[in-house]
Length: 627
Picture 1: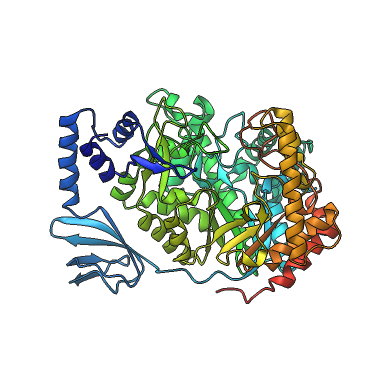
Picture 2: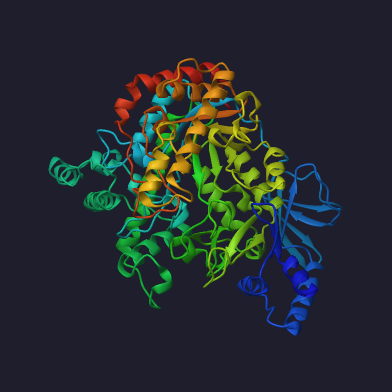
């Protein structure tokens, strides 16, 4: 690859060579670099175009960047006028000693966004809690899937047992049509909530309805199915809420909510992929009002759940998916800051030799900066409004993301860099203002700079027991990192009982997903179990070697670790063998549709759940609630 093209790519954050999972230096195909540059509106089609684009890049470098992010206590030698967030102005000889917040800087004829972020967040409290796939937490009152009423009740109960947090799956909005998107990690919008989680009976409109209307609403309640049927749930809840909507008060909606509700109204008529809509559409105002009302209901019920968790030192922790469906609401509303046609994924590795294509849209780093990171900020604020923490899925994506250009396969992409100081700094500022903790999902191959960015800001990483290895041996919990949220497993990995009974081998063998022979996989699974048992015994956490005793010992390992936050999964504690999501499958496996084996009411009385709660509460006694 010629030198000028490499220089041009570097100027726009497009990577031309990277270290693969096996640590080999991998060169990106020249055509991919040119195509990705084209997605950033940079013409690299020939030598003359490259020279012209380099000249443009140099002119841009000679001016102020459109957004400057400083950490508290830093100094930058720029003289000008700062308009503070409160509207006051200061003439400054240098950028220093400025308050935290979102400001404007004027230097000569240039005015740019200036963000001052905290140097670091307060240290997270030492606490324990539960990892919950909310859709799976069904109760006697819920309609086919766990809902925000179940979250409120569970959070209140958990707080009473000494828990300090409840970590959820993403509750992001999905498209309003059938078939309903099951994966919480492929949302239509990360700025709004999923109305499937509304508890109909908790709405003011239901409470004040007369007996006849209530009977009509109640008659729509779906049966509890063996697997969660999102289409049946949405059909029932939408029908019930449409019956109640005429009595709802009409409230003015802000611009963002109105646009989101307009998308939903249009999607009902023309499909969820806005890229296939005809031009010149007009939405039915009644449907716009209906979808805006649904979001107000979500907001009210999320607030009630957060209130139930008010005595916890952390509270509700919301999960931020790495991207959005490009044809969804955010793709329609935020097209100016999303790279059109790009799909986010991951390069080939030992487990995914063809790479991964997640089908998600990516931020454009240049447009984020040009717009003062407003869309990123607003997304964080929406997620933190009713929560005490945020888990950032694939946190390495704040530094770089694997872009796959249109028409290319998952392996035919490259990394595009983001301004990590800006992305982490703005995250720190918004978390600071919300009094929230930040957890980064930094599993797998993660650059050291990402780990430093987390630790340097008092943000936590993630430790999963299955991955705490030193060669073939498991690492003793006392050696696990302190600056982490520790858990036994995740939604994409075997449950505790599944690991011990080789369910993760059985299901992959049945579906033809094994990379080696079934015999080899079983041999490895048994060796892993033996190594796990050996570690637990050496740590003094296990005496009897039966599966139930091992599951208890796994949670004792969490308790014995120095990790600031430790979380237990209800799937593990209840002995569920099936994992919530099996990567590499779609219809072959009931991903995101597995309910917990007991109702919420039964879970709260379950002896095993209470035993784990006592174990973890003894290791992480609740500190005073943070102001």
